Length: 161
Image 1: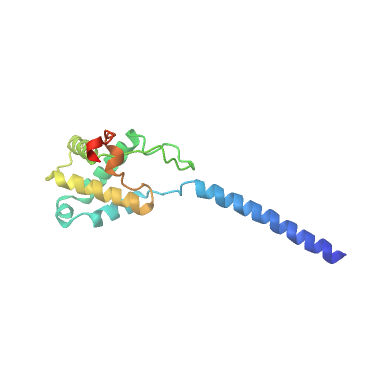
Image 2: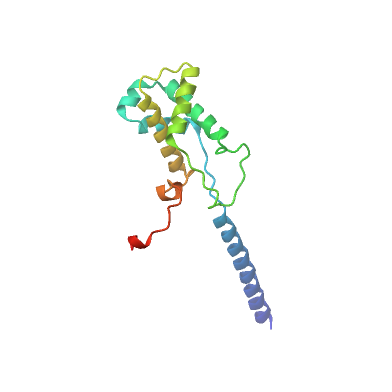
């Protein structure tokens, strides 16, 4: 009789554990993994990722100021929240970053901060390298396909066949 109670208790504990583990696994699957931005790590990553021409023209201080300006731009666009909490993944909340707007902003920020940019392509390279760092730490999604960004096309005509 004691064996029956022990077996029943073991089965009950197993069922409770399976339900709790299953529920937590489902909850964690629905929450985006937390990405941690480390400024010094980002600076080193971007400095190594830049093409040699850009590395030669930008000092570490100038690069750091450009990265800080890029982070300010992201914050202004709502892409860097002030309060970090676990959030459910939202497929419908698509956010698209256009390279030309951030480049123009960074050129203006560099000028206002006294950073001498010898070639505009350096800013483009910094943005590309910074976005590569974000991708490396899992902070951004994949690039949006051009089909999703363009206006809806007209329905095919009968002649198209």
